[in-house]
Amino acid sequence: MLIDSPYFPDELEALPGLLAGAGFEPDALIATHADFDHVLGRLAFPGLSLGLGQSSVERLHREPGAAQRDLRDHDEKFYVERPLPLALGQMQGLPVPGTVELGSEELELYPAEGHTPDGLAVMARWCGVLCVGDYLSPVEIPMIHPGGSTADYRSTLARLRPLVEGADTVVPGHGAPSSRETALRLLDEDIDYLGALERGEERPALPAGRDDREQRDIHRRNLESLR
Ligand SMILES: [Zn+2]
Image (cartoon, rainbow, N blue to C red; front, side):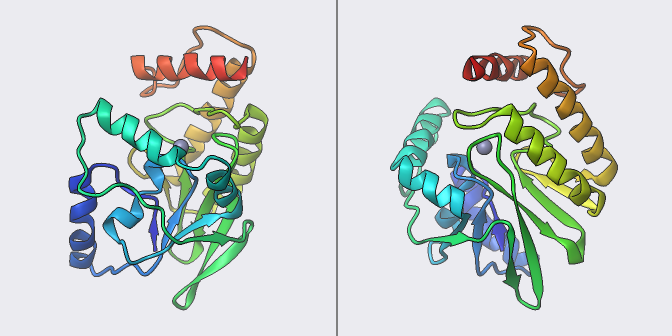
C-alpha cells in the first residue's frame, strides 16, 4: 500500500523501480487527505485506484478540479513540467474509523481533521508504523487550511497520542520519520502552538527547528484563516 505520494515528476517516475528494488510492489494507493500534494500516487501507478476517507471523497466532489488547480499553481511556482496531467481516476471511499485488509494484516484508519476538513491517519500496528498525514511534522508547524479548525486539530492530536505511544516510528507527510519519543515531543509542541494561535499572538515562540521564515509565513496565514 502506497500512502500519500512524492511531488516532483522525477520522484514519481523513480518510485515504482525504487520500491521494486526494495521488494515492494504496491497494489493499492491511499491518501491521508485530499490536498493536491498527497493525491499524486496514480501518476506513479496509473493502474491502481486511489483510496480515500469518505470525508476526502466528499471534499473532492465539493471542490471539483481544486486539486488539479492547486497542483498547477504549485508547479508554475517551481517551474515543474509534467508528462501527464493529474487524473484522480477511480476513487474508493474507505470507512474511517475502520480497517482495511493488507494481505494477512490489517491497517487501522482513524479520523484526522483540523488541518483540513477531511483526513485520516493509518496505523500499521504489526510493524509499529503510524502514518499521520499533515500532523506531527518535524519541519512544519500546524497548518490550518480553510475548513480546518484548531478545535478539530486538538481532537486529532488527542486521538493520535495513544497511537503514537503504541508506535515505534511515526511517518509524517512532510519531513523525516520520527521515533515515538520525538513524535510525542512534537505533539506537545503542537498543542502549545495551537494555544498561541488561538490567543491570536502575532509573534509566538515557534518550536525549535520550525522557527524559520516560511513557518512565520504559515503562522500569518493561520491567523488570517481563523479571523
Ligand atoms: Zn495537507
